[in-house]
Amino acid sequence: MIDLMKLHDYKQSFGYFALQLMYPEKLDFHPAFLEEAFDSGHPGYAHVHTYWTLMQHFSLDEIQESYAATFDFQKDCALYMTYFKFEDAKERGQMLAKLKLLYEMSGLLMPEGELPDFLPLMCEFLYAAEWLEDPGAPENFRMLIAILEDGTYHLLKALERVNSPYFHLVKGLRETFKACAEQEALHQ
Image 1 (cartoon, rainbow, N blue to C red):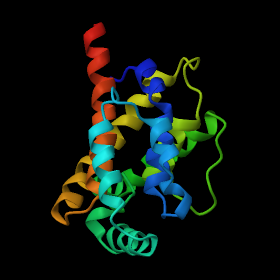
Image 2: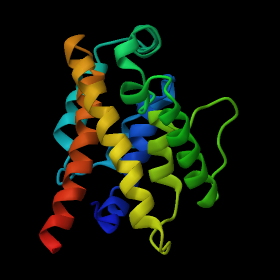
Image 3: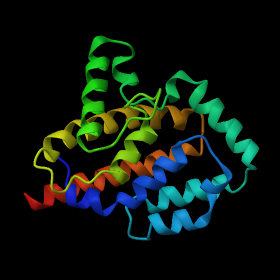
């Protein structure tokens, strides 16, 4: 289970994760985005700052080339969170339908041509959606976080193998989920 209040506390950082996991643009690397989303007490702080520091050594062209080479051309580094477990099986279609319904129930529209298990989109949902008053949120988020935890685990291992700076970003995301889960365990 996940502590929805704690998850809500980290909304700003999910916006940052979404931004950094999309195709890179120059403004994405403005230091204000990092400073607004993370303070030193954030569970992903150290990992995200390592990512930030590593990325400062590259030009925007190099970052864009690295992004495409990593996420577009390496099957193991796909940003589609149900792909690792289901690939193109029938179960994946069912998961995608459930995610799309969750987004729509929260008032968010799916971008044209994008699958609902796209990691930046999932992070954007955590950033933009308002779920605290939704009585179905605990059950819905159990599914969402399970998909994220499973998918990012496989992604993290693949990014580590290719020695990608994005490893640290995804590690920071996973640490954020872990802190939310641990927090709820303390309340029981």
